[in-house]
Image (tube, rainbow, N blue to C red; front, side):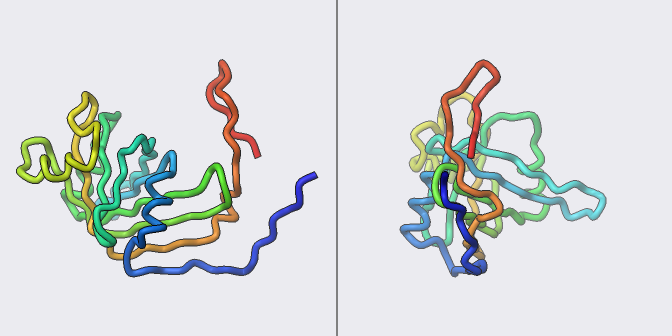
Amino acid sequence: MRAARRHTGTTAKTFDGVAHARGEWLMAQPLFCVATAPLSADGFVNTSPKGNRREFVVITPHRVAYLDQTGPGLKTIAHLREIGRIVILFFAVAAAARIVRLHGRGRVVERHDPDFALFAEYFPTAHDVGVRVIIVIDVERVSDSCGYGVGARRRRAPSHDGPVVAP
């Protein structure tokens, strides 16, 4: 029987930017979530899961970017154009529990934008079919917490019913 993990009482920590080791960890995560919201109180907060297939990069301690793939909606793009606020959530799913959030201001870089070529250099698949835009975030706050609410998971081989994640 496996020994239960205990919460050590460690609380969330905030950082000025994305340090090198933390950036390596972020880029190694298989998925992340992006959350944005409109200015209007009547609008809905949007959360989008993103598969990380070398589609997220730390450019500097205060700037990150990711490839936005074609999907069912354009809420992230619309919210960024309206107000710019964004948070990216990373969480460990295959190792020790950990959560990292990047808060900042994002902008949409489309293919016809003069900056597209500059940012596309960070992504080997930037010109592939399905890439809608590059989202560039100026990071204002980084928080790192224990992630015990998520817990560690190990991935098993996919079945006919899809992938299975087991404790």
